[in-house]
Length: 421
Ligand SMILES: *Cc1c(COP(=O)(O)O)cnc(C)c1O
Image 1 (cartoon, protein in one colour):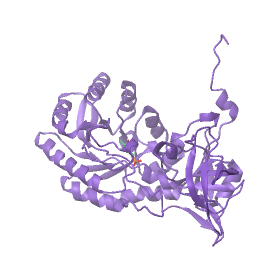
Image 2 (cartoon, rainbow, N blue to C red):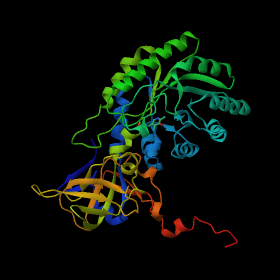
Image 3 (tube, helix red, strand yellow):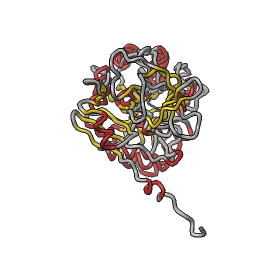
């Protein structure tokens, strides 16, 4: 459920009409709902009630400072995958002890910054990385808390570009080698092993892959404990999917996911961490765009809109579906017609939807791309020299621009001319 609903024929973000925001900031733009962000965070938090746990928002989904601060004030920890994300989390007021550091390629510099600034744990993805964390910790006279990310070799049954838990993926160490890698970790004086980490992919719409993976994690916990390792924390990753196509998708609910965690791992007495990103931010954001032209092609009509693949790359990158709705609700009984909805970028891939059934639209009309809050603004680029679009946060009847649209000059003046020119 989200807080983007029609009232008297106009689409609202909480208590603010979308058209009012569009008039103030221009199109295209992203708009997020505070109430929806908080609701999704609380669904996870409550799903793990009764278990010692921390919900670490995977901020790569949407990392605007205002979004991070909203979640941090509600008690969320953060899952970060780069120095930039670590510094963003700290800048938003997240204490180091609530930040977990994931990612396959942490550099010595990133490790140093996190160790000095405070970190809950590093989720280690390889033996060479483990050696570097050990070396940096020793150099600083510190001990680095770590989990090791195991790859359970389960098929997450999701898009190939976001499946991470098969043996052919670059992530983690094979679960079959866990014993020897944990033994190596225990022998390194700069490391303290605190638990196990596992993240099998994103946009999972079925609980079964999670069950298979968590059963393997449970078994591994017992094995490692028998070897003398103090496994007290399990980081279970993120990945729970959202309904991008509301008319025919109903992924599992956080409460069902929480129950599965309790069923498969509850008996171990471990502290549980989860790292949801998409489910917290995805349906908490829209991208609003304006129709520039309606172009009649051979046998099809194109809606050419001012948002493009550089603003929202998911359809081009993952063949992803986004529900697209008009900001002014069509009158009941209005007949729909099929449109190809495309952006102005010079790529055929700049196509948001083909033959999408919509009530008739005209130049100047506003449309909303639903489920654009996660992996939207963060994946944007300036391709075709289109400046990054603004982000807006709504809170009840208030809204604020949380990232300004840069002026063209700001974009151009980031380039520098060598003196020989
Ligand atoms: C991307 C990622 C997540 C978040 O995945 P969602 O599908 O957005 O919930 C969590 N943990 C790790 C390690 C990730 O790489």
